[in-house]
Image 1 (tube, rainbow, N blue to C red):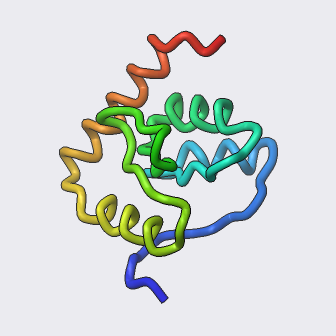
Image 2 (image 1 turned 90 degrees about the vertical axis):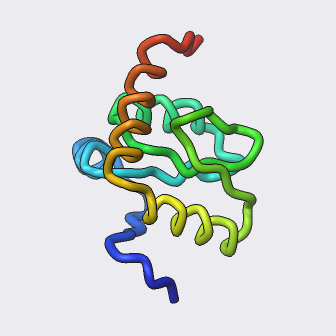
Length: 105
């Protein structure tokens, strides 16, 4: 349905398969209302992936917000796909720095 290239839904992954996909991804969609969002957000940040994240959980300069609708997620993906390489690298660097300084307790 979407004209966006190289977007893959992997479903639930565990262990090395999960880490390999996470660390090779440019962006991670953080699902709304999940118990382990804090862990997934942290892992996305340390892997220096940009986050496409539900509104209200916005991390300035490292995420693209969306509402919990398919249309909103697709719009966020289009925005992400249109980012320049420089902007994407800046977001990824900011994510890695944020993961280092944030108090995760």
